[in-house]
Amino acid sequence: MYDSRIIRIPTDAASHLVCITAAIVMIAIAVFLKSPEVAPYNGIIQIPSVSEWLSSPIAIIINTVAIISLVLLISTITNRFGLTSSYSVLPTMFFLILQCSNPMTGGLLQIGTIAAIAIMLCTNTLFENYQKPRIERSVFMMTLLLATVSLFWYEFLLYIPIMWIGLAQMHTLKIKTLFASLIAIATIAWIYTGAVYIDLLPTPINPFHGTEFNINIPDYANLPSTTIFTIISTIPAITILFVLKLSTLYSEMQDKISVRNYNMYINTVAFLTFIFMIINPSQILNFLPIFNCVAAIEAARYFNTIRTKSKLRFLYFITAIYLVLYIIWIL
Image 1 (cartoon, rainbow, N blue to C red):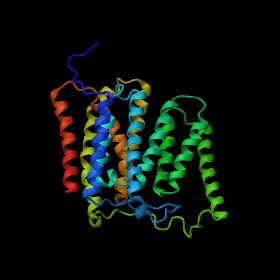
Image 2: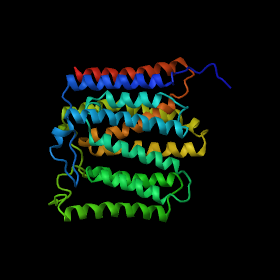
Image 3: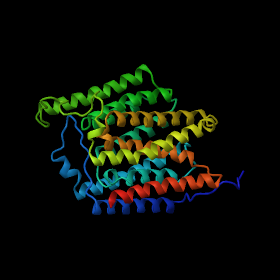
């Protein structure tokens, strides 16, 4: 039955296009007025002249296409699996606000944006295989994708165990699926070893030399200004997520079991990515696109039904915060 108290937010294709167009304008302004920086990262395979290539005009175009691809993936996941109402513009809007309000993630192609695409593709595959008895081939392909990206960014290896947690939450973690995942990791290792053997790739002197992932206490006092501002800009999203989770604990219990499990996985990725950012703040710009994806889904779930003016004003307040942060950063 139609509830007259619900405040309707535009959900048609035009509203999505408006959000995407606004994001492209924000990216163009950030690139023109600011000099975004490529976040440092290390992997077994090193991209030649990474800082120059990732900040080139071609890379900026690729980054814009990647962001739009993430929008499509996030919208597909939230709508297809009942996390929000059909055709909701909220996942699109929230992700673009979070991603593009920071010129460093909106204006340049960071390795984290590529990693976020891999995570969202795997999330879609995880959800569509919910409770299915035979998903070894899907698990093999998901792990193959994650392991391939890990060759370029060491820290991304952490998301393979997170995928195993997701398999358990989707009730599909078995000896066979775990074995399929390990076979995929071995396959990537075998392909890489063969490429080194026939000189397609250089032999690394020390594969883990220079990686910034360690167990040392982060030196927050000596972080560059870019990282500090990124941390500050992340605080509103983290605070909002914490408040939202507290306020929706009861309502989430009324969801279907499958939706609760989907949301549990989204929460797991959000929480662990947040922990990774705290442990390794020098990599925050690479972890941030992944965090933005899951944070956008969670925020969209909370604002999916707006029945009070105060909740609508809260939505406007969040949008205003990130637009102000964007303006401060580019000036």
